[in-house]
Amino acid sequence: MKLPTAGKPHDELLAEMRALQDGDADWHSGKIWSLVYFAGDDVAEVLKEAYTTFLYTNGLSVAAFRSLQKLESEVIAMTAELLGGSEAVGNMTSGGTESILMAIKTARDMARARRPDLSEPEMVLPVTAHPAFEKGAHYFSVKPVHIPVDEEFRADVEAARAAITDNTVLIVGSAPCYPYGTVDPIPELAALARERGIGCHVDACVGGFLLPFLRRLGYEVPPWDFGVPGVTSISADLHKYGYAARGSSTVMYRSKEVRRHQFFSYADWPGGLYGSPTMAGSRPGGAIAAAWAVMNYLGEEGYLRLARTVMDTAQKLKDGINAIPGLQVMGKPDASIFSFASDSVDIYAVADAMDSRGWHLDRQQMPPKLHLVVTPAHKEIAGQFLADLEDSTQSAATEGPTPGDRAAMYGMLGSLPDRGAVEKVIQDFLDRATEPKEDPMAGLPGGGGRGSEAS
Ligand SMILES: *Cc1c(COP(=O)(O)O)cnc(C)c1O
Image (cartoon, rainbow, N blue to C red; front, side):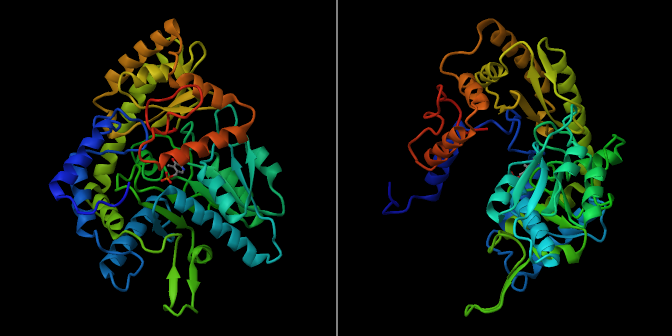
């Protein structure tokens, strides 16, 4: 494959690209349960126009693009208020992962500023924390120290206390965690951090633009934001329940003093003085503009309306799942993200049966379970989902896993004791993912061949 010698016409290209999308997950009608947060065609139009209006702008220079300075600083100010910290400061990033990477680097450098001798920094995190923390640990040479969760799938505070050493620079909690949708005991974790003068990061990537509205609607939400003493940073993704365009998140800090440790500056480059707040150099102005647009388009009323829809739909789904013989929702999810398992059927065989009905469900492991992130797109389709789920559970119970389907593979990969071997499988998948003619699922052990992504 090489660059075409002659360019192709606009219309022909777009037709070719649209045809490719026929094979994608059907997010518009809500048949996918992660990856896309669709709030309706009207919101989509606002995002598209805002994004394309700022398509060529670059958030690297607020001197050249004063417009972006205004938009980003207002997004940050509105976010700070939502997160209970009117004094809080922050930056927009490309996503939850970048926000988390920045929070880890900031906590490490804040600790080093006080203790220049600190050579082997550590962070304490629940096993349910997002893999972006492992990535950050790997990139920034901070040792991850894992703590278990309790029977409600919330971080074990006593284990956190015991895991802290003189080298600990950061304690992590989630609001909520992705696998179970439960909020960790943030006041207790933050108090431990405060006693020692170290960072406490709350990962509200998925909850940051949902939980504040749940509280206003009267739902009971455990304390998790800057109102909790000792919380030093929070990540909150605009491109999840903020309903912004993909490629936008926020990383927020209690004070400017904390955030100083995030910045990068270099004064000796022949190309000029260089400063950049986050990982990225050039930054898409479109993502900043779209975030500002959707926040102002929806307003508090719009977010409250969507939050109510999402919570009503989640309740209907949880009740419906618990009513299907053999299926149980796990723990006590605090919002609209949850997982369910089975004590009688192979839950991965249920997922395969759902695949063949056009659904796209995340398979989770340890223990095997399926996962739902409920969005406004699911309101109309929840009834059909439950009917299909009941059928799929029955067929999995009577027929068991279909040979060549994904169930056997996920079962095997989830329980293989040699996790290094499983990581190699993942890396082989990543290799295949950039080869144009390959089906990345095809080379997986135990069959595969359907779908296009390792969830
Ligand atoms: C989505 C998510 C992340 C990572 O965000 P990306 O935008 O995918 O990089 C981190 N933590 C939690 C709890 C999440 O739900």
